[in-house]
Image 1 (cartoon, one colour):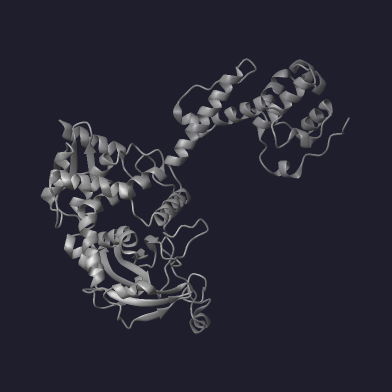
Image 2 (cartoon, rainbow, N blue to C red):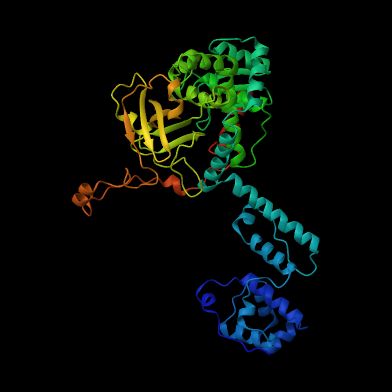
Length: 489
């Protein structure tokens, strides 16, 4: 028989897992062929006290733990073993912990009494239900880490496909053919024709829920839009994105990854209608032949925003023009808001591969453009980096959340096709590998101010919070339902 040892140091300092300990004591008691009365007599305590211990509702004293170990002929390490003594014990422990947790309490359901009479298949089913419920809630209420992971995975897929999705292009062209649109910018009238073709009527209202850009009443086939043109988006694009969810067969997203994928594909669908593949590719090919490729020309030809034109260029440039490229949307603070690349440019990234949220090098075009006085024309610059020389064209646009730069870049081998290739502007960047490039202050500044500066940082408390809950993160579902109820009458 092994002798009892002192309580392990880690368990004496940390909180004891009472549920696991109780199940282990019950297992050892039954293995020894003892009843509760037998064990109570050996320990000189009441059976009711042992029952509370076995059910994880009473914390034992150190002396009682030593008595238990001696009675069963085990060590204290065995009592606090990492693995449950059996599969049934493991399931009982998991179910008991789940029922005592806040998630189960929030459901308002009665607790299931866990005993030997509970069939094994019922126990397994209850535990599986708890696991699935927790998985779904954790995915829907994604953490910022989950959001970065989903975004990184989607961007990798986009890179592999050169950001070109022929099935979405085909769906958009089918609709354009159905309403007879062949060339020129897509007017609001044609956008309304597309909605009508799909069986939807449009309502412009001044009181959309604050968390939405549009609301679709799928029961009555009505799409509600806000009156007037927002500073941040085009009503045509918002309408076409809403229709895209229907055309592409989207269902309510199960997690943040699905939500993100649906949003990207509906945006792609809208762009395919506003800038149809056939006419846009022909426009770009002619500009390439003249060596006059320019994002602002694409913007003007199809009456879209510069950002939309830049995104659309990334969809078609590699597939139809043989040009690899990268795109950036950077806030005036230097933080990357959106990014895409298939040309090998070395964007900064965190440990998970996420680019969004990283600070771009001060020497890159997307940062330099903020200091350019001429905001009417695009700014062009060559940048030498550790992975090659890139030429970029950029301009700034104002949004409600600040000023952003929008830039398209290509490797040096492709610059011959672009207007602005003769720019004298050139810089050199060592980022992200070399911290002395722009992240660290020059030695003379550091020596003058180290220890003498105390900035009051803006508290970005949203970084500590989970992603908004719900199938559509950030959307107030109650507000949406109340809106639909008011307007359905």
